[in-house]
Length: 455
Image 1: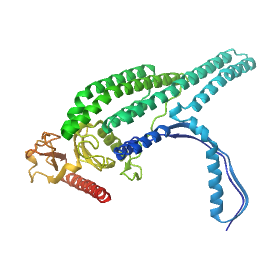
Image 2: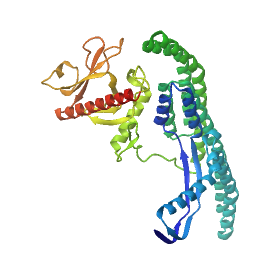
Image 3: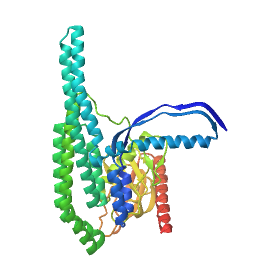
């Protein structure tokens, strides 16, 4: 039993924002590709699951002369905060991107109008007291600037949320997985950049031109890609995807262009007040595996995870996250990295990516096609590989029919197989790379076995 004469938790104030992660949205889309109802439900959740700066103010929790078990106190605490959260339900609804965050817009307009009246009054009183008219001029300037910043910036921000929502949902409903990931990566990169009107116009023009080009070229490229992967049936599917993209991608481009311009307007008016935009102090924490495992923060893992995500999203090297026969059963979550001395090898649960020290990707290989890993050194036969290092690891990869034997160093042995040489500066690092790759291959095969058992 517990006794409290007085237990008080002070009031809590915070701003609540929520947005589905890019990888989470991609995984949901992949997992429900063959289930239209689930896909529609996921899309609806994405629409209503974006909230920006809902102001939450929870009243204090006060208990006097409590005598009882701890569970009873926990129930009271839960009921109190559940009631308080429900009290802010309309506030959270009004902060949804779906509606353009009208609560935030009204808050900005109210603050601008209040400053427009209050700041000149404060300046007038200071001018009278100190006999300095400059205070009145300063107050009028601050009030006018605040009104302009909050009204124009608030309207631009609200409109940009609507156009961004339109762009994302058209992309989710009409594009394939690879195109969606590319689009989301571009949008997040643009969003992280500091913007003004000039930059917004430039970014908007590029967004529209890129989407228009991809829409027109997709009518030709999508059937060819489909035919390579699935023959006649794949070509028909590719043709359908290309025709849909011809209509949808220009719409996405127009929405993205409008979003970029509106964000540029908001950035310009925000700069009138001398406010610096919020930026990340450090890269986001790396999350491991489909279980979204959290580990102690590591800057190296965080940077490697972002680099892997970017390469997978752009789909360079002819292999883009899950396409080309791997199906939606594959998972491309981060699984670590290993340094080679000449660069770094990035590992996901479905592929391996080689990156030079300059940041340029040298190869991308799906783990499903890797069938042999060999340690190579000057005693072995590394000299036959045209590489700069004497030590390293050789990946033997079963290339799909029709693929060439290129792909990051080393010639293929025969049709249907290619080799990739990962150069290391010491035998010790080569051994570490081999062990990491072996473990990654084991993790992939174990995951595929679990999928087969589950089905």
